Image 1 (spheres, rainbow over the protein chains, first blue to last red):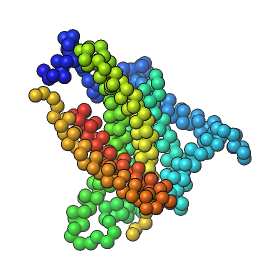
Image 2: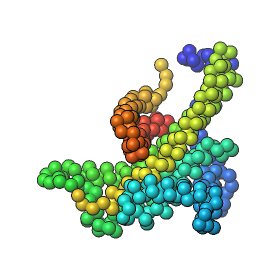
Image 3: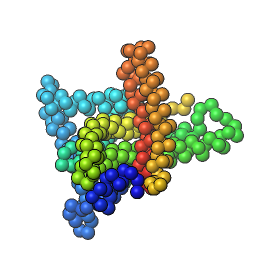
Image 4: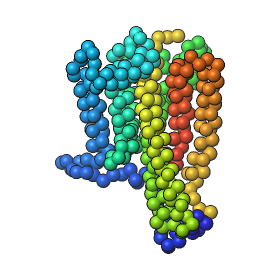
Length: 267
Length: 67
């Protein structure tokens, strides 16, 4: 047994069980017709309701001189519309994508921030399937838009053949670019969001449960480390707030960039 | 000696993104120092680059737990 292990298990416990992927398998809250409804599923629905409710309430009165709620809604909407829509996709064809980008950004943001809200404390995209579903939707959208504008052959040529490349090296470049642009992109998109939320939640769990274990089951010399672990848990919680916002922003930004790349003309 | 090879793998995998993110933000700081008006335009590029480089480190720690 290591030195640290012998210090900690002074009371002869079986040892600390660190949090792992099993901590994310939450039990079912209730069952509907044989299908278990778990907390992440409920949180997804709650986030959709919250985002829709906020923007609906903000846009309802449409006064010329906006009240506070309408002003907040307009400020948030235009920050995504301008910063992510117009600046990335270009002022010519960004308009149809603004509802998608705005909804995507705020949906992911609210879901991520569920990881920091007391009594909820579970970022729903730490369940990988939910991140992959969003990435699948993004894949359908940016490929569909590209095929609609350029035709299937033209779109594949745009994505796989970079400008100004001729000759036999194309045999190497085309499969590489196809794989990188059409296969790997949704995987990394989803994996980035999922892994950030997963790692953040595991960090919080580790510091909280580890601190508790050190405080209660540790030798007396080790107990202050438990307090330190709890202080670090609080600091990590602040870091997590920033990371959650950043991941929502980056997911939406990359979506806008993929759409812009699919719409781009031949160089 | 006991432990998990996964964590050694993660530790090694975190070196690259650490250097990469340092380079990205060094470039951002340099750019803003030379031309402070460019801060807004450079900030979105810096954040994008940070998230892309960080993704590799985060994939590392997630897979170290899961696999």
